[in-house]
Amino acid sequence: QVQLQESGPGLVKPSQTLSLTCTISGGSITTDYYYWSWIRQPPGKGLEWMGAIDYVGGTYYSPSLKSRTSISRDTSKNQITLQLTSVTPEDAAVYYCTRGSGSFEGDYWGQGTQVTVSS
Image (cartoon, rainbow, N blue to C red; front, side, top):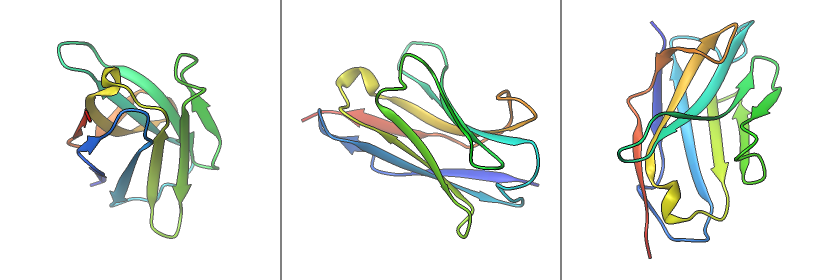
């Protein structure tokens, strides 16, 4: 059973860079055809797909966030990392990492991590 666990600071100051890590257990991030996505949900709003990294390290980004988003991986640690630069209060959300099998649609989700943006 694959499990995903997000981690990172719960509080980030405006203009800083948010960095989150997703640690995967029960499966390898390099297994064929898996896509590892970051999704967020601001308070009172719907889910927003931010981007993904695939099983060979290829990256994909939402056009609206592409200029501020970077997704990378550490295969030795079986981790996926999200970096979001120049954060504003509008970036406050619950951030999730997910696994998709052959697509970005998540079939496994982490429990999510709350991020607040405030000075």
